[in-house]
Length: 257
Image 1 (cartoon, rainbow, N blue to C red):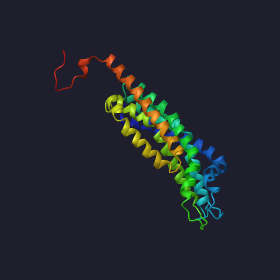
Image 2: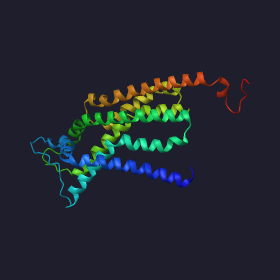
Image 3: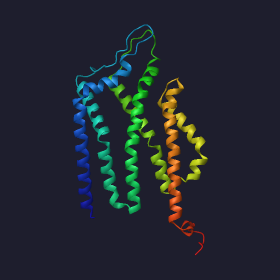
């Protein structure tokens, strides 16, 4: 394809993705009150030791802040709900430049990424109330706290995205294995380091003194790690059966031929 055709294809894909985000943002705008109640609920019920309530929605920092906050929430909902559409538009733009085998692999990566991301985001909504309670427990007992709604919203978005990305771990592992950068032998030998990294990430993402909350993220991630090892093992065996041994001979060595 000439450069002009590539640019037209990119424009068409970008328009479809933008329309999908816009359409799903309308849903976020319509249900804004219900969504903002869910976002603010983890800290709305928190009280200090002396019974002083923690006031959360400080919307009136500027006169335009309530409107911009509703736009931000609606846009975030649009991005999340339309993620299958715009993710597919990205893959669809790249697929024509891939080989047949690479196309099938890329499609499977896309199919696996969407449900895993949503699973991580769903787990984040369960862990968020506990995390909010722990963080707000550091508030002095005699102080009546006031939180900015925009700051809290940003924290929620980062929290949800962190969980979603964490659940994409097996997709990246299998992808690196497919291109030969992360062999199965390395995965199996490094499982202890992987477990340590997962526990550290889980402890940072869920600052809860109760071990159950940390393990709620660590156990699924570690299970997904071994699922990726299993899938990579099957892929390596399949490649060995398809490719003869002499094809894997380094370039600076003589093959059996």
